[in-house]
Image (cartoon, rainbow, N blue to C red; front, side):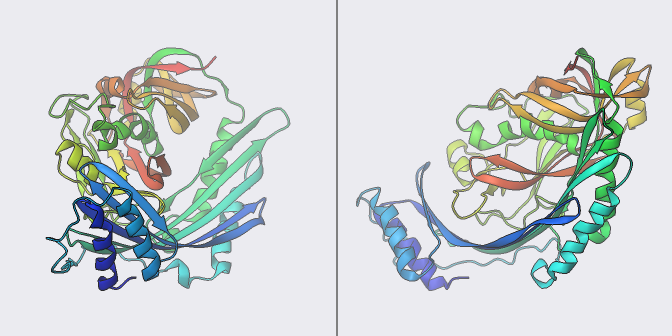
Length: 462
């Protein structure tokens, strides 16, 4: 994307004000969006995002700037402006005098893209969205909203350690919202699978299945009664149920929070923080998964990071600045939305590992409680992990059996406490896809878990 000589000159200019370390991130992203409302095209958009970000480190202090002009003059102007912001002391020479010897290790390719979005016609993409719309026309569904998305992001990361990494991230996704109505009641359902794949993804994850799943959920909840309120055992479904772990536990395992001591887990490394049936990972190496990367946005190879091993906290998610702040080993967790953001420690594909139980056995242990089959959005208090999440699809459990559907349920709890209250983990691990927002922007991540039994949880309802 840029010649090594230009990159070296920019990095040397960036260090002229005394920075200990500098990094250049260059990005070229193409995106396609197609939205159908009731089967008709509502929006057809997309475009190109191109530019570069330059980061300087003075100890743990970060100086960051960016530009959408990657000409030699513009990049040097940005580098010199950032360098001047720190004064003129400490002009470097030792590392730069002989020129940077960039290393280009061959990154391990974990998967390949077959049908690249830039080589596929708009009509084929539109057909995918229309197939999902048609499949959602079941039962009492009156309205559908279908969004097709593909992204191709090419990046170059180089730094004054001599690291040089290039990667291409291709992602495809389909999102369907179905609204069911019968004149007296109204309910909606949602499904939104995605992957780090080209359009071959829709051969395994059929658009018809996505449309039908959104419609099934809307129809199932249309005539549901209201959920009771109070403390009770809760079985949380697999897949997107992992959003609670992601939000209430995952974020406070990132060094962005740990280094500031803004995490209840900051001093718990090596200690028991969950039931012995609980192990969890953040894994950027799952082939084709929505949040996978060959290399992170700091040129660190992606990896599988074991966070919790049979209840014991074993690692945090660590980026370069977090490594300097805490002394913990980098885990390939430096991520950013695009070149206008400096990277920070972020999750990739974060999930609780499969156990040995079955969903049926977990449910059979509950005399009266809630089965939260699919979860919706919620809110979390940073640092403490206190949360409140809606249940999109819920059922009462009576005498160990799934009974009538209920609506309006919310789960209220604390991530750290709930980890200790998990008493059963099934073997049916699944993941769901989402966009995670935090200090370095919005990034694709997988959340996931098997079915879990939590012995006691506060359910908000009527």
